Amino acid sequence: MLNGYLKVTRMVELASTLERIRTAETTMDLWHIMLDYLHGEGVKMASYHLVTPDAEQVAVATDGYPEEWTCKYIEEKLVLVDPIPELASKLARPFYWHEIRDLVPTSSPAANRYLRAREDAKFGDGLAFYVFGPALRNAYVGLGFGVDRIELPPAKVFELQCVAQAGHLRVCDLTPLPDEAPVLTKREAEILGWAARGKSNAVISGILQISAHTVDTHMRNIYSKLDVTDRTSAVLRGVGQGIIQYPKTTTGITG
Image (cartoon, rainbow, N blue to C red; front, top):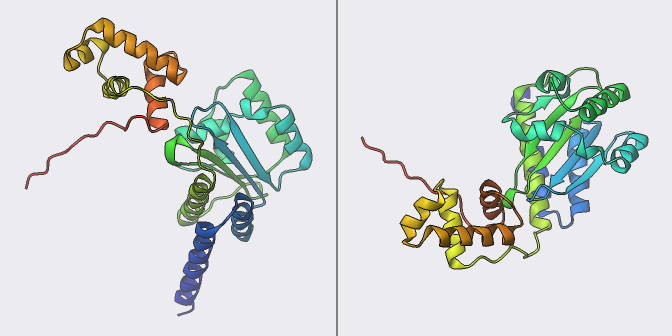
C-alpha cells in the first residue's frame, strides 16, 4: 500500500511540474521551474545549449558549474570545440558522461584539449542528451550529479529526458522565431520540394516540363535566397524554415 501511495504522490508531483512548465510566462520563470525540478532529482549542475536552425549560433545557459569554468567556457568560446553536444545530436539515447571517451575515441586536438580540461575540473558523472523543437530548433542538455559515477534506473533517465523536452518546447513557444524566412517563388518552392524527394535537376525538368537550364537557374536562385551553396543544405534550410514540408510517404495495409 505504501509503495502505491508513493507512486501516486510521485505522479502528482510530476504532473504539477509539467503544468508549471506549460504555464510559465517568461523564460526566466521557466528556467527556475526547471532548476527546482532538477535539484529535487539530485542534479548539481545543468547546462542547456539552444541551437539556431541554421546551426550558426548557440545560446548557453548553465547552473551549478564553478564560476571560473563558466567564464572560461564563454570567453574562450569553448562551445565551438566541445564535442559532447554534437555527439548527443547523433545518438538516439541519453548517455553518461563516463561514456564520452568511448563514444568519441578520436577527435580534433582542440576537442581533446577541451575533454582533458573537463576531466581535470572533476565534475563527476552526469547525463547528456538532445531535445527537439519545431523548425529544427534543437538543444543539448547536460545534467551533472556531482558524484564519480552514476547508473540511474532507465525509467528515471526517461523521466528526466521527458521533462527537459517539455521545458525545451516551452522555450520555443516563448521565443518564437522572427518572420524572416526567405520568400521563394511558387516555382522555386516546387523545384525545392522535388529536390527534397531526391530528384535530380534533369528529372525535375521532365516532371515540370521545363528545360534543364531553367531548373538550373531556379536552383541557383534558391541557393542565393537561402544563403547556401549545395543541394542538401538548401533542402535542410527549406524544411527548417517551413518553406517546404518533409516528403510524405504512404503505406498500404492489407488484411
